[in-house]
Length: 302
Length: 302
Image (cartoon, chains in turn purple, red):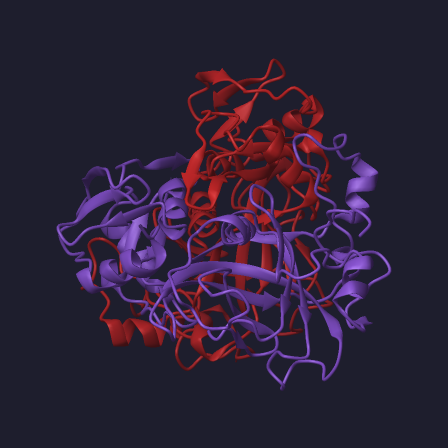
């Protein structure tokens, strides 16, 4: 196998819809280099492409939305989970896409969901945004990592994003980089009547660190949904499911670096160390059931 | 005038496209209560509605996108600026919409841009997102505040968001609040090949405070464009126009609470007090011209 370029986005000469007779051809085109694995990733840099080909019983393919199951936990050659998956190797790499807003190429093979997969060979089906990831108990009773993939609209600027790592390549030139850029969404903060109410109850003070970000427009804070809205989480937009947080703690909470115990102690989910009490406002009560959901699905699993 | 309800979003019974013979009717309907002023706002809570009626020489109406000029700096009854506008009163209230992602109702009157305005009377033209605000020297040579308004797609859930202030009303009930909610975007963070490169050069350390947010997916940071992309700012997506920041400092920088001097000292733009040196990476040089643009247009004017 020739060494393929490490490119996020469309690979030049391989637009969405291109088909390949087999994995070898897919690899030779540089669209998905590994000859067998379903994930082409680098742990510190992210995942450039995945192949959906019926290998995981917990995958859900809805066409433009996919719930993708992470790697591992199976016997060699099997499709059933026989042990917990870990947030390591390619699972960790795909979590990087979430943190940085990096798009992933999706290729479908003949053993995938018949509604969306080619009958023979492999097909490049375009770029997907990896909106969030979480862990859950899969069909076989073991922990699997799950990633919410949403297809992005194809646009001329989405082609060929080459990311230069620390140690590789010169800084991107303005013009060259601009040509290759696909602007992707790294993070979206939403406001609702409920988050607005919660922020005002706390007078925009972060419930974790107490900071009030002062801006010329007045104080700034964000409403964080504890159990995420929509998708398979089905969290509610209600005061008991919202925390008032500064952007840093909102990010850490959403990415599972921080959790909150039943006793309302904020905990570093990676070390298990307590950080301090969740700060309260008189009329705002957080629902412990939602905090538990966050601990069991969003916060780092141990 | 009857006291009108303070509602963000569509006012029940007044869908987009509703027309009113005069300001009195507009006021009576609760769509825009003030009998004369162009902005219906409360300083700490935001602006619920504005009337575009040819009163400001620096307004630009492009239909679904509007660059709206703030209040003040004119002689009574005039349309020309005779002094600098200040970020106070209704200008400050409209900046609140930016910080919280609150939508504003736009009403057009007969003296607005003929391409988009009714010939007689007033028309409610729907909800607009106030994406950002800045200051610039207007046509008459004085400082004006400018707000970028973008029309949001009409949706059934966009109707009648009633925001309860600290001192007014009970907490929203789950069901009732859900009925009234329009989810609006408070903040979007984008990733490009250039921002990705800058973040990696700094190994995800904030150039203002040095923090590296540690998450289960690895380090987290955001690329902040110094001179904003697009719109009338026309900033470039190039390394010299990007800072690697933590979400808190990214927010403070975008909202003009912080600026950076020619000597690369980070300054509290509200007090003028120095905060410390902008942290550097070996291959990443920030362009002083972009920092100057940010000081002159985005950072708090003094």
